[in-house]
Image (cartoon, rainbow, N blue to C red):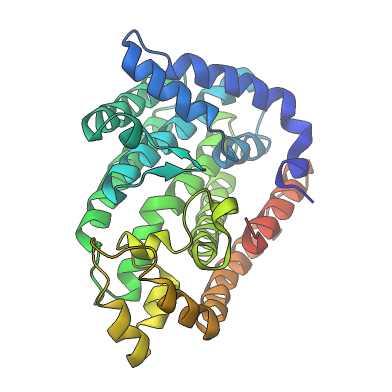
Length: 320
């Protein structure tokens, strides 16, 4: 089953959001406009808008209200991707040249900054002050996460706690807030929007750990970048943390630097795949997924709940 088929009944409203994203990404400056349009055309799963729409169905659903939240969250996500590519010195994303690769780091950083500013502007359409407080704090945390990612590159002595905190800021927080703000925007109760926050947080943690696993187990075609790119770029993910516990693999991994080539890391990639590292990482992902499903169980029954259940299970077990 394809991911998009799980929420096909949202297609009309997602089309509205796509058009709103184009308006938001537009700019009078031709260079920023071109960079933003390329980002949009690169596509993506639009996971955050989907979570916004589904969570908003626990209140008084109105696409003309909810669309602003969905666009704001996806715009922040797009900004973080542009900044991440600068941090990682990444040439490809989803198989296409990144903004920093096509232009340069300065254009990429200003493009990301522009998108962050636009997300705040879009959210002014939501009158609830709580929504603005949550979004502002989220942007602060996402930016701190980007700084931590720079600091932690090629740091092979970092702890599991450091990794989990980083992926919270990198991925889980934005998914959690997508769920929470979707519910808040349509007047859902505090009890419900808080539960949806934690559901999104746990799903987001599982999603990122699975993403980190796929960097080793998937293919270059599916990833849109070389297998093992995270390790090559100095990003210490959960599989790498587990591999570092093995003295033999540790000595090889610690030799990796920003001068290491894709060919040079192939032996350690093979050793990781031949060990129990991937299985151990999958178990951690499953723990977060089970926590998400437990929270979902306590929410009112509706079509959104059953769809969130299907999406959560898909995310935790996806292969691409």
